Figure 1 (cartoon, rainbow, N blue to C red):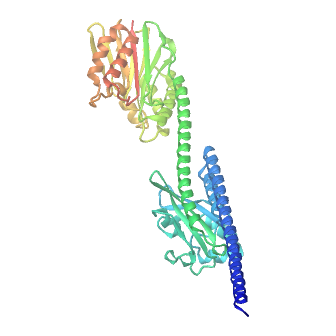
Figure 2: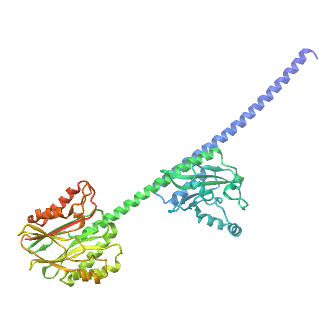
Figure 3: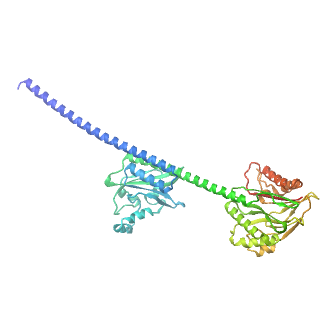
Length: 483
């Protein structure tokens, strides 16, 4: 073989090696491209699942769902996004002592310690474990979920069987799983725990899965918190609507116009501090042209006071015709009322019976503020304080022994003022009360101008004294003028 042939063969060998290397490189490139395509397809699928999850979450919130419905959307959504076997979401009890499941997906592996009895019973009926998981009460700070609730960050446990710190899954007849678990926080407060699990036989969660899970947990906490706020706001609006309806009903119970009594002019108002008033006033038509005039104040405020007010009004109207003595009428009301009234509640009131034929009023002060009487002849204001006990404090014996009638003889130009403590106890910016002295002065200065002016001037004086401060108590004022 000459040198030319040798060189020719060597060149062919190098060409073959280069060709082989090129073929191998092309094959590797195709495999890498295929793997890259698969990865991109997987990421694309994950992004699509994530998009659908967030879309469903938004729709769920828009429907103002219960925690259970929203929890199902969250768990099923994240299970689908990260390809988990199952998932759970737990919320704390109201006393913050336990965590309880809001939703456990159908195939979720146990993430709590199972007793030997449950495992034994599960061999006979696999529904035992499912039932136990849905009825679980995990103590705060105990077990995987209890500890995760107060943790700072989400965690990824690659194999729960090897996670012996919590004493779970060790020596238990359950498959090993990979777990991702995260506390749920909203507005700086812990509101629950979210966890997903994947059978080790199906692989492990990737780094990307864990990143997606943390993001979903954050979005889920935000969704839960906002949904609760929306529900609370809706519930509040519903309650306010019911209260406004109750207020309208209560307004119907108040006099719709001034009564017509020969020789007298009577006028009153009720200004509620809240939607429902615990004060009331009433005019009751009695026999022989007489008129019952009532001003009452139920202890407390709000719905309970309003209900008791309505009860008192009905009872008083029912027995008012039974006697011409206000104290005896109230004694009957008290005996009916006492068995059905709470121990911490009572009713104070002034009840007067106005007789146009005799120009006198007989009234009883049942633990209420005094009645003020303006005498035109002297220009002075008297304070009348006959003895009397509030309704609902005593079953009857003490009430009837203590409470007495008081007779007010009225001349032309005289005026009687009934009011509730919201008048004299109105506060100014310095937390000083309006007081009886100011009330007597305003009453005395306006009494000669008539019942309507008296009520208007007293109301204006109280409002001016209180300034821009909120009205702290119900205000009721009734003036009875002898023409």
